[in-house]
Length: 161
Image (cartoon, rainbow, N blue to C red; front, side):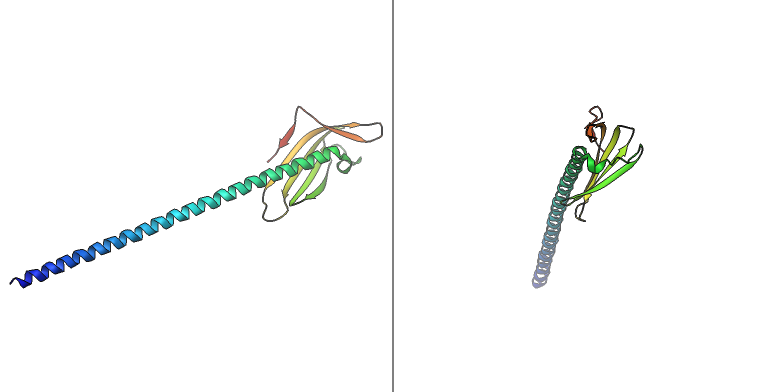
């Protein structure tokens, strides 16, 4: 009579140990899944921060390329402003510098006013940044039949996008 209750007591104790082991296994697996999710989140955030920084640098480099092409066009207008361009006419030329393709457009607004715009975009597929800048300029003729361009200070330079 005393043997029967002991065997059932042993089976209850071993069942408690098995269920305790099962609980520890579930908790351990849950902890591993949470740590993996946290690691994946950190990796994603780091990757996105790197991409955002790279895109910001690309935009700044595109702006520099665009403004540089505008400054060159204003100081070396012989390339940009042929004498045959009429009012409302547009002329353009391309500048390739490093990893950037810049197209400079000049539109004649009246006899002495021009809108000059530079459109810079990455030359390779890895650079997706693009910037456009423009400026209104006034043309003055010199005695030696050359033309000098002066930015109209009241309007200034415009970053288009």
